[in-house]
Image 1: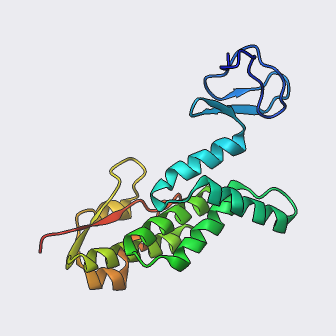
Image 2: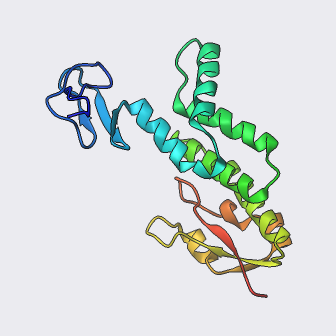
Image 3: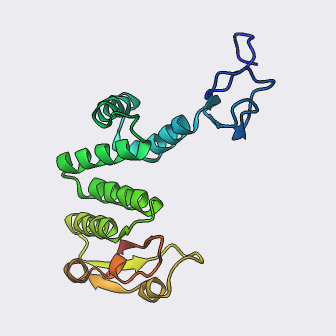
Length: 197
């Protein structure tokens, strides 16, 4: 029971529940799913918001900033903006004001993940992520890199063949062996590591 002693309620319809859910569950009254995040029973939208903010925590995006952008976009659209719409707006704003290559690589990997979830081609974003990763490695003094794959059943044969191969950074930047060689429909998960020459 909630600390106040009152019975819990559905975050979707407000109906009183017999017991507090401990995991994702359909409300017996409205049929919508209820989710549990941080001990709170929340809507699907709130769960998605909290999950996305946690996934990009290293970018320093605050809940206040997220909510402000949602309000602006919702007003612009005339309907409640989705978590994905807000994510795109925030990520694009960060690209415009970020000069750190490693941070840019993370932002583009997140953009790739979002487009992949929508069933769209993630390669342009993965290419940008890899390019920024290589630039970051070059800035840190690396001159040679090697490809490393995710080492799971979803790695395509082209990425398996590239695993461990070494490239001069400038050649890797020119040829972009990853993600351009990848044939995995959900997107390449390979990355570059600095290598001893």
